[in-house]
Image 1 (tube, chains in turn brown, red):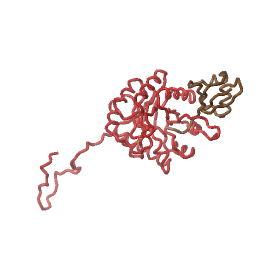
Image 2: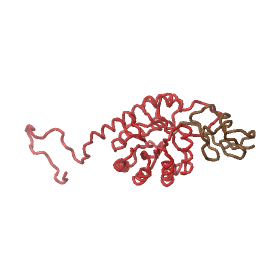
Image 3: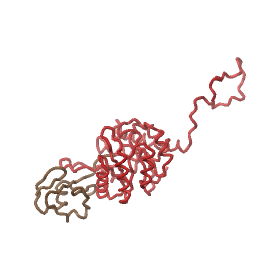
Image 4: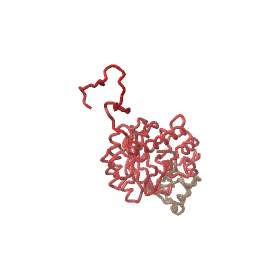
Length: 66
Length: 269
């Protein structure tokens, strides 16, 4: 299945969760947030939110700013 | 010198932005020197190719309060979504709300800003909006429940100081929430001016981060904020066209010449 992660189409195995996607990108916990098709996925739901293909996932972290 | 913001008491009236520092070492040194308690961060996509240290580690290690921003958002919709993500990322309801209207001036889009502020207040956020120096917009932001108003002195990163001190004074005079001068500070005297005009605090990023010596500038701006706050409380003398002698004229010795002082009667004081 294809999922767009941070703007890049990626081929992922069926059944992968948001948590799998986050772990493939970063080891950080605090300061990381995920949007699935524009809406926040609470941290507690990362392991139970399964991707089915076609979604847009944004994985964000803290950077210097403001 | 403490002040109330968002239901909490703070001892520093300098809020520090973290954008523009050349290294996390510079950021850390400037944070220590500034004694700022509230520190802003932004959210951006994770870049797996740069697993470098996060500014968050520096801020957390120093025990400072993280204030996420919505920098880079151009619509209320994007800003509200970013604020929700920030709440999840940093376990905080506080948000520095930025909704930009134009990338040349980085001026806020007042229509989108007010709409986003209203939505976020309704969702329980403590909203600190970056706004233009328009007193009416500031009043509207306060009316929808923002915890502060943060007018710009001049455009972000411009370093011009306060372009329109009259507007900043009007906003400070009318507001019952804290007024935080945000954006435009170039050097210490600008921060002192903001406080003298009646602002409750100053938010500063570029002036410190991009200075030749960031910790030294952090110290200077910290002291300027304190100096301006004391000056404001002290009550400055009126600005006059003519001199007003500080030494009494009575009892002046006559030591020759015309005893009558020369007076220009064409101009009345």
